[in-house]
Image 1 (tube, rainbow over the protein chains, first blue to last red):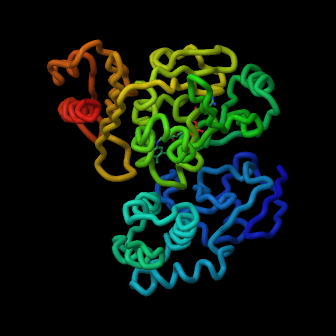
Image 2 (cartoon, chains in turn purple, green; image 1 turned 180 degrees about the vertical axis):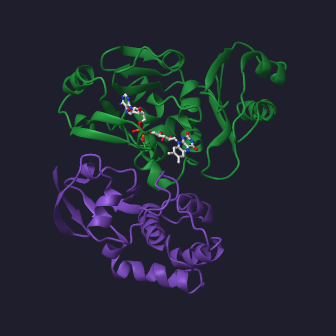
Amino acid sequence: MKISLNINNQKYDCQIEPDETLLNLLRKLGFKSVKKGCDTATCGVCTVLLNENPILSCSYLAVRADGKNITTVEGLGKKADAIIDAIVNEGADQCGFCGPALILTVYALQKELKNPTMEDVNRYLAGNLCRCSGYEGQLRGIKKFLGVK
Amino acid sequence: MKFKNYAKPQNLAEAYQILQNEKNAVILGGNTYLRLNKKTFSTAIDLENLGLNFIKENDENIEIGAYTTLHEIETNAIIKKYFGDFFTKSLKHIVGIQFRNIATIGGSICGKYGFSELITALSVLNCTLVFHQNGVIAFKDFIENSQTKNDILVKIIIPKKCGRLSYKMLRNADSDFPILTVAVNKNSQLNIAIGSCPTVAKLISAKNELENISEFISQNFTFGNDLRATASYRENIASVLLKRALEETL
Ligand SMILES: Cc1cc2nc3c(=O)[nH]c(=O)nc-3n(C[C@H](O)[C@H](O)[C@H](O)COP(=O)(O)OP(=O)(O)OC[C@H]3O[C@@H](n4cnc5c(N)ncnc54)[C@H](O)[C@@H]3O)c2cc1C
């Protein structure tokens, strides 16, 4: 099947299998920041933005992305830097496997929630699992970045 | 889940026709649970073009289209106005925001999953389901029988008028499956649903105040074992959660 989608503001015409996931397609196209972790809709490392909203690309069919806008962390450009710096400054970057998905989700959180509390932040990020940081450092950085009181 | 063909029909009749013609076709919801299925389907039917993503209100009811996502429901102003945080409480622990942005209300209902928190919540609200072929079916009938196999869920109708609501659940860890879920709607009668038993939620309507909660539970509900909890643990927890839910609806 042929589809045409926008990835990070660039148009891609792709040949896909009908049952291919968006995750597979993105990795085939070279967007290796999008990770295949659990592949059962649990861990969140495959998160991308679909028309600005975070979704699991492991569950989303590539064919459904036809004509839509996808953003991976590469597409955030400078907007990602401040989030990355905030996390790195707390020494919480660790292995980095969950990083791109976390950064995209924090970016979406900032757009969706006005004046979030720490409880809102924890709730919004609950679907982003990390196996090595223990979350504390990441959350300290994210709290500073978002200016949560 | 694998499938050979992908269809994006322009109307319900066309979608239904594919379901009738092919024994092995499947309707796509958000594909969050379906994707774990080991089968190969002939055709996956995508209803995205059919305008089934909506939350509307009329004089008496709220209508939710089958393709409305869980996150749209938990953040919708109309839903909040009539049901407060009842739906938010039943949805906010389901995996994460990335998941709830694609999982749909239709898929959550049609899967009839035992752990479904939305089914527990909807069970107490006297709602009805509208199917393309079978028409209007009471929510309880749908959950208890399966006469709608090979049909398409179009929308869910929830009466605006409801009593005091409460939703309680217990889970081992945030975003894990729940061990037990309880919903209460206290109006002129008491609607009590208990789910994740681990079987699907069951609704019991009681006329009066409950005199003995644990007796009510053991008489009306049965519990089972799974890797998250034993039947007897579930039964004990059910009394505690129901007591708390009833206190909240006083
Ligand atoms: C890792 C994981 C954790 C989960 N944790 C929880 C939890 O804690 N609590 C909870 O309540 N749930 C939980 N769930 C279940 C989750 O709520 C369901 O996966 C989700 O609701 C299914 O919705 P969907 O739109 O993706 O449906 P799909 O997976 O696309 O479809 C589900 C079924 O419904 C059918 N269907 C879909 N739409 C229609 C329609 N309009 N008409 C007829 N049939 C239709 C499909 O053919 C399929 O059989 C979890 C699931 C996963 C994978």
